[in-house]
Amino acid sequence: MSGSSYHYVMTLQAPVGSAAAVHTQSGTLTVPAGTTRAQVYTHVVEVVRRELPDGAGEPTVLFWSLEPNLLGGDR
Image (cartoon, rainbow, N blue to C red; front, side, top):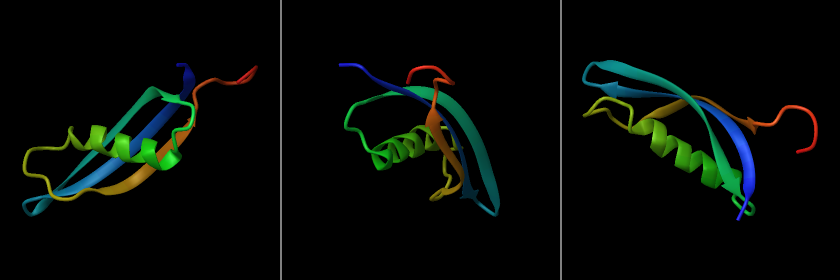
């Protein structure tokens, strides 16, 4: 099953003790036909969340972008 390729950028901030951790990650993913934007968002939050330090609290999304990876031409 083929899908469409998307590029994402997400920044999370989470409390760590009396400070805050901030992590930005970008990448591409291929999304099967019928996948919702909400499903992709939830997946990317979980992927980026794994990069926060151990003991980090509930993260807040500071930035989120999801765009088709292919520029110009046929999509």
